[in-house]
Length: 420
Image (cartoon, rainbow, N blue to C red; front, side, top):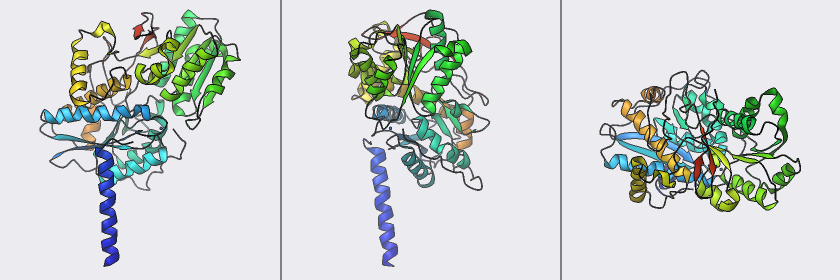
């Protein structure tokens, strides 16, 4: 009898710890084998209890990608607002957000707890390519929607193979092709050097770049250097790339390493004609400011969301609404951090999905609505863009614009190439 009581005591303590992590400020990629699916498919997750809609999420509140942790915080703040306003169809949204340190093994552990112990009906916006890859088969086997995964890797927009996984970011291959087309139009004889993260994310964007350059243009890539998220810096990679005498630099890196690369390119006097920075590291607050705004001036990126610090949007009602939200619900969030804009928009998309559910918050119906968004325009998307998904096309964005950093904000170049 004592050993049974002891076990129950330990389980209660563990549940309390998990609740603490989910409700307080919690706490980046590694390589780990993907979780093997069960021998037999499990039944769909149970519908939410009458009192609310229970969703789960992993975020890198600690570790090498902790700069992205603000995404989870602002999404929780957004649904606090939604709940105060009456919820969705009278149901409160309970988003349980826990730390995975951007480590796939920890992501697997946390997701299992959310699905099997907390009985969430869906996972929303778990962040990172490697962490999402580690849980993809498991969630599809369990028939728990992996909604709007915070990545743009191609494998997460494959409804035939993984019908329960939907993606939020524009395709990394689309982004790579966008930079390639711009290079071919503006710098047709340039020599290109590429820094990339050694995982599906980095390789996907690199593949898109080479595909966009074509067979002839791909020969312009004269140097490539990869890095692991466990590396302390990418300084040596930048020195090596400079030695190739390339005059175009494509920076495919997450915030910490992207900032290091921008700073090092400047400090060693590498004079490039163009420096392309991937969109996941285009935050003024967490990347360009640490790198040095003067050292970042002239950098190009792809955009699909508004820069809320840009004076051209001072009178934009959606930007004013966002600023008021931030002040009331997430005052510690920085306007200059593009990750906050991103999280706010993603939360609005989920809110729209839940509204379309019309009170049926089962896993199956949530997935159905997430893959049937039509011309939805969240606040803060670039003018002229809208979100569309279908059962055969899970990527919500199908085009990007180019912008250049002028030392203060991102300014659209007005010459974005047309990419199929």
